[in-house]
Image (cartoon, rainbow, N blue to C red):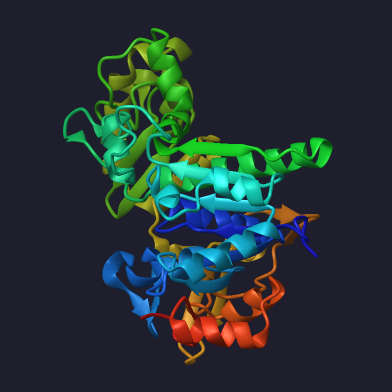
Amino acid sequence: MGALDGIRVLSFNHFLSGPAAAQHLGDLGADVVAVEPLTGAFQRNWAVGNRFVDGISVNHMTTGRNKRSIAVDLKSPEGVAAVKRLVAGADVVMENFRPGTLEKLGLGEDVLRAINPGLVYAATTGFGPDGPYAKRPGQDILLQAMTGLAAHTGSMEHGPVAVGSVPIDHHAAALTVAGILAALLERGRTGKGRRVEVNMLQAAIDLQGESVTAWLNGAEHAGPRGQQGMANWFSPGPYGIYACTDGHVMISMSTPSQIGKALDLDAIVGFSDKDGFDRRGEVSSAVAGAMARMAMDEALPKLEAAGVWHEVVRDYDSLRGNPQLVHLGGLVDTETRDGSPMTLISSPIRMDGAAADLRLPPQALGAQTREVLAEAGYSATEIDALLESGAVAQTDRMSV
């Protein structure tokens, strides 16, 4: 049993932020039906690293759990009619197309709300439903550039750096889920459906809330990025990554006196806490010099003994051996239907101490077309006719 048992979600999402949001709802118990084109949604047919396992895109693995799939030709009248019938029994419709896409298909919000007035309609876009940038592609790395995330990542010495993952997509997904849950809560009180809008532009700004707010309110800065090894422009020294002879260590919050005593740096032991800000370059340079002369097995005990917050810089290969992640069940090892090993990330949301169940691994395209249409009231004969006409499809293949 999940917290959202009894809630049905129709997900018209593609690529990452929308599918990830729908997956969170599925993890919480909602019946999520992914409405896909006959060729499959984008994330089913494209993969980061061009990696497919038994025909399954790693992107589909990332966002495809706990969902059923129905394949529909939205350019056919019969396909559109089928979707409208599904909408009548839905609680939530989600989409992350460019503004106006579903309207062109005859499935705009007004049409769907006329069918189901209590519907929660959620749209995740790059830049919002209108305005001068509304038709631009909302892509993570482009928004990193536009919103300052790239400019504030890296070092002043070496220039801006793109974050090596897609944090804006994932943050937009989380915000979309929050909006949908709030709208469902309100509907429970009033019976009224709401439109939920999240755009990646504002999600990118929200993701940087601390830094942006400090900057816009006059915090002193020499530039948008850290200098002399500092991880950012706004923290006191020695906040950042420091190289040892055999690896790297991230040093977090500490005072100059604390880190100075830990590493026997007489030059900064007498610095005040305020000097951590005002003389951060000196602090960082001193720490960098000391760390560079030590191996990890020498440096780490010194930092630990002094209570300096720190962590070894690790790669993804370390995740399987992370004892806390193992304790939490953060990774799920399973198999494809063809027997190849497949690793999924488990839901980070826990209810009463328990992680969400993996009810459905990523499904084949249209794997539940028949059952979903039957639930909407179609007879077996009608479903056969829709399949024969090509308005819908059901396949046992993971990719096309």
